[in-house]
Image 1: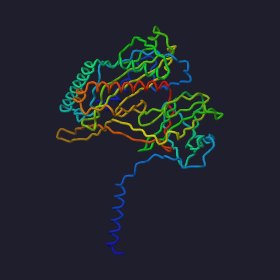
Image 2: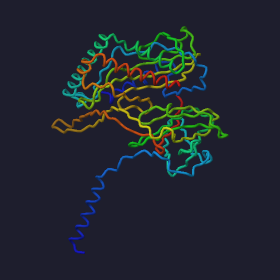
Image 3: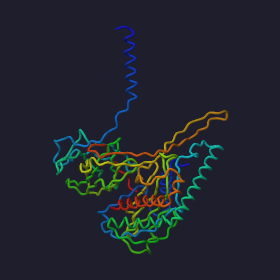
Image 4: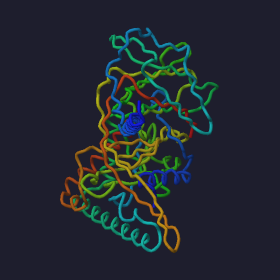
Length: 246
Length: 214
């Protein structure tokens, strides 16, 4: 079991990056002065996981010591997580909520609010969980730079059971901006809205207090509010990306 | 002084020491007033502390902004604490991470200025550009070759403003159980969900790190 889901998600992504072109291993701050010519950003269709997460970060599986009992506890917990995620995916579908489309809309709005023009681009992604290789932008609409976002996880997260450790919305992602000539990465960072035990090098955004659910039946009982919580986390993440490009 | 009195005194001393060990220090509060009048007219750069750069690993350098350190006058006559740092030279490519570290309720109100070798401000960064990375409210910046000095100040304009953050996490503990078949290690995790409250302060802890480039 990974120590925390947030770390696992983050480091899994970092480990996957070497498969991409010129992968950075350290955050690259955007230099607005040096990039003052950037007016229009081409925003690639983001990479998104196939479904939402409903993570209970400390559960029966976390009291295991291996062996038959530990293995059984792990399987039970994994099965419960799968059930929670299936139920959450169905809820979002029933509410006609498309997280990827919502994220795309929110990101464009956030960039525009910071004075950028945006153009949607759809480069081919070698693998769903990886950044787009620079060459894939060649045939895309012209822009002064290209923004690519890989969302690792979104949905709800509870650190444990009980009223004092409720489910809160979350989204974890990495993003990078590629120069117009496709030769340089001019910004790279990771943004974790509602993480567990944040790594020191990722941006940590605390969840807002409005959307808490004591358990998964509470999520199921209030579909519009459950969707609104995810929308809020998405808006927090896109606003942070725009802030990184300020 | 008889033996009984001595015994009581020793017991009292031991009890006092034990109680002192039990009493927690009060939480650190933000400093909401500068409390100084004799501030420099402009930041003094001559004794800037050098920031060391290791091309393989970033090494954090901790600093303190506050008494008995320097302060500088401001146009609105409030004043700010500040500290000056000499940036690595020699055409090195690196990223600076400058972060304010919370301590109980206190969080330094950060402002960063980069200067050239003539002491002119080339760029400045205020709290709107800072983000939490781990537990630090920090900013990343890549200095230009002509930027040789950094001044970190307390930003009096935001002192007193509060920050409330919800943080979730996991504490992990493990323990061994010995049975006839051997020793078994069990691990337990306990999740926490807590609100941390901090207030921007004139004084506070600072961490600076020069990071190798990607």
